[in-house]
Image (cartoon, rainbow, N blue to C red; front, side, top):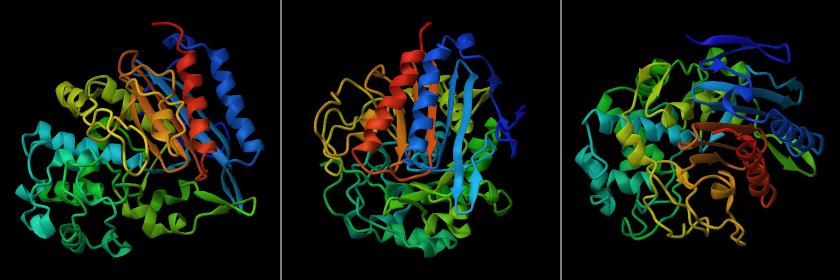
Length: 396
């Protein structure tokens, strides 16, 4: 059962599905975690972002869940533990896990051609794209886009993704498909479940786990809880107009439109490190998680990001790649923490957030903020934030 806890800011309540624990109770040094909190408070004082939220969990227990600063700045609204935060590309992990479930069910295989399940997807030379290509960003259509028209018309969505044009031969490059691949994954989920992908993800993945504060498509009655995402213009934090729209929040854009609390995301990653179960409920098999969180792209450089990414079938894996190189966008790897063990995996959200899990220690962590920060600050702060959590783990 979800525990309901009062917000520290006195402005709301949030369901927490993990048992609460002290940091010391799960082998974390609370004094070291205080440095993390102080760093976030300093960022807010420097106007790097209006607000943030973090959660840390281990062995199925929530050791920290804190909210900082403001969810919105005009008018000012305090961030509370009930605030929901835009995940951007962290949403990809949720949608990928829904595909993993279909593999577990025997409905598809990672080696299947997408056109095996969506015959019309073979148009424009895409007949040889596999689901493995799709989830590892090797599909060959990184620049394909869908308009907001498909948010509410999923028949149109299916037609549009099937019309995507191939830009290079699948499997010959690794290039981040930031706004294209997971629209295809969403259509696959709909084709195989017979349901709107948002409903399928809710019913098959999130509700069984009690993750009521993780949304791929935020219901109208919950949108008051959503933090505004901001950009910096002329030294001021300005709310991003599109992401403040009700239609955007409801759409559940599969590659970048999910919302969640940090506690819900940390719990989702606890499920993954526990082999597919949370509080005794199983939604994935251990073997599919083990397979999906391996490095499937080796040391190949992502053509878009300019650095090795160690792509799994959804997440990025830390591996042994150096992170002190001058690559222009090293944030995906640094977000896991330079000192993270090699098997640590996770995913970031554009200029704002990261979640990860370390399967060796059972530790999971989520950091959410509400400004799309620019480089090099973004990657450097992610590295410091995650390193502080890794360094706090002092007991095996």
